[in-house]
Length: 224
Image (tube, rainbow, N blue to C red; front, top):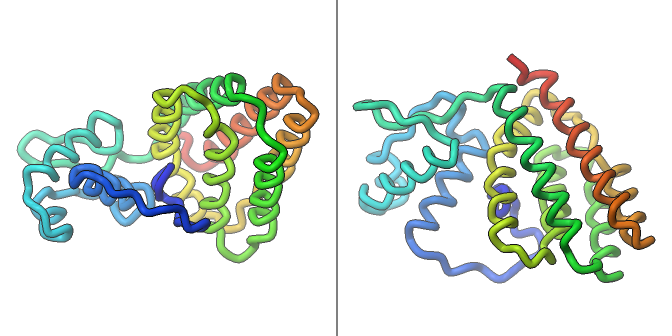
């Protein structure tokens, strides 16, 4: 998935040539976010190395990185396990994510009419996809990435992507439990309309409302 690391290459973007460790990182992260490694499951460096046909050393380094980023829990003498899902984590992540994405939108140059049209088209695809909840989520991730990708602060965008990967674990689990989750097309349309009218601050406010609503929906089942 690559931004949330769950996004399929729906628009045929050029394939990235990545260093080996980054390829390993993305492969393991995708498995965590998609639920191939469920919460609480063990992630063994030997098994990952064998599956990816690489040595254990880069795998071990990647697992340590994922532990630092909050995806894994290290256990002395017992390797790593996927961090359990908990509402408390959502309550910590969402205010930071809301602030960061709002800052990215606020500091982006004005979005072109072509990009605004593209956002509307993508949003239409979200609303029209009624059969596959995961595909709807993947398009939603693309929509949010394109909304702020013009921001010149690359470090900020990288932090947003990392936090969205953490949130992505919850979104995937939620969709598996409640596949009929309604898309947020109305919020998206309103944000685009406000940006087209040149009212960035109201668009940012609507984006914050959108994220808070998303949090309340997730906390319905992950609050503990």
